[in-house]
Length: 251
Length: 251
DNA sequence: CGTTACGTTGAAAGGGTTCAATCCCTGTGG
DNA sequence: CCACAGGGATTGAACCCTTTCAACGTAACG
Image (cartoon, rainbow over all chains, first blue to last red; front, side, top):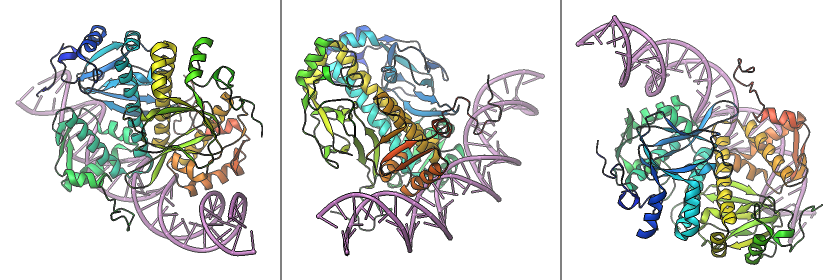
C-alpha cells in the first residue's frame, strides 16, 4: 500500500494535507504557531474510540491517515451513523456547544490524528483572524455536509443513495490526490447501510445489481468504479434530470 | 395575539430574547458593543425572502418575531426544507464557508430580524472572546440540530417523525416563554411534509388519526397538545423503549 | 362569488423491510 | 495445514408502510 501524502511526524508546514486541513489560508509564520499547539498522537487501532458520547470536550482532531465513523445512539438503542472522516477532515467540533461530546468516533482502520487542544486553539484563533475564520468556515462546511446527508435521506431511493454516496467518496479521494475510481474503505456494509438509512440486505442487493450492470463494484472493502458517467446519472446528478420531468430540456 | 417578549426596536440589552440569542454569555459592556453593529430591519412580509441561494454572504440574522423556513433546491428541482427558524434563532451561517448562501430563507409570517453584518461581527468577535465562543457554539448547535434531523429521517416511521417534530416545537416554544401545549405556526402541511421527508397526504392522514386519538390537533396553523405523555411515547422518547425489545425492562 | 391553492380521503401499487436460511471470509486452534 | 467457529454478506419470499394517483372538500382572496 502506498501513502503518497504524509510522513508520520511531519509538521503542518510539511504536511501533504495542509491544503485540506486547518492550515488552509494561513501564511507560514501563522502555520508555525499552529504547529506549536498541535500534538501528534500515537496511532489508533481499528475499532478504537477517539472520543465517546458524554466525554468532556478537550480537543478537536485532524485525521492524518485512516479514518473514523461517527455515530450516535438514539433513545431506542439503535445507533445512527452521522458521518465518516477521512484524511484532512477535522472532527470533534460537535461538542463545542455543550462541552461534552454528543457522538462517538471509532477508527475504521489503523489511524493517526493530530490533536489540537481546544483552549489553545481558541486562544490562538483570537490572535490570528485567518485561523479563526478557518475554524468558522470548517464548521460551516460540516453543516453543509450534514444538510446534504439529510437531503439524501429524505427523498432518494435506495439506489440513488448508494450511488450518490460512492460518488461523494470518489470525489473526496480525488481531492486528496488518490485515484477516484479505485480505492479502499474500511467500512462494513452495515455501517454504510446505517449511514444511508437502509438495511444491509438492501445495500447488498443493490451492490450486486450495480456490479452486474458494470457500474462499480465494492467487495472486500475495495471500491472500483467502472462507469463514472452511469454513476453520475444514477445518483441523480446529471445536468438535465430525466426521471420525472418530460419538459426539462434546456432553458 | 400576545407578544410577551419584545418591543420593536429594543436593543440587545432590553431584548427578551437575549438569553437565547447572540448576547448569551456577554456582559453588559460587551452587549452594548454588539448593539452598535446590529441593524434592526423593516419587517418582512409572509413569503418574502431574507436571502436566496447563490446570493453573496453579507450578514447573519437573528429572528425577533415571526419565523423562516430554510430550503435548498436539489439537482432534480424538488426542494428540501432543512429547517425552521423561530424567534431567538440565528440563521445565515451556512454561507460562511463558500461566501455565498447555499439555501433560501422565506418568511412564514410577518417577520422582523436583527441583521448583523458579518465583517463587523467577525471583527468584534476577535476582540471579545466570549462573543467568538458564542458564535462557535451557535454553529455547533446548528450542527447538532441537523444531526437530529438526519436521525429523524433515517429510521423513524411517519408517525414518529410527526410526533417528534411536534415535541421539538413544543419544547422550543416553552424555552421562549410561550405555552408548550398551545401555539401557532405559520407552516403549510406541505412544508412540514418536506421537512420530514413525507408527502402531504401522509401527514394529513396521521394528523387526522392523532387528533382522533386525542393526542394533539393541528388545524389552521394552530397546534394544541392534549396528551403530552402519549406524544412522548409515540415519538419514541420514553425512557424504556417498548416498541421492539421485549426484554427492555430496567437494568 | 368564482378562482385558486391547500387539505382530505380512498384505492391501488410498489419499494424497502423483515425474517430466515445459506454462503463466505477471516482468524483461531488443533 | 486443515477444520471449525463466528461475524458479516447474500439471497429468497412474504409483508407492510408509504407513495401515487385521482377525486372531492374547503379555506382564503380578489
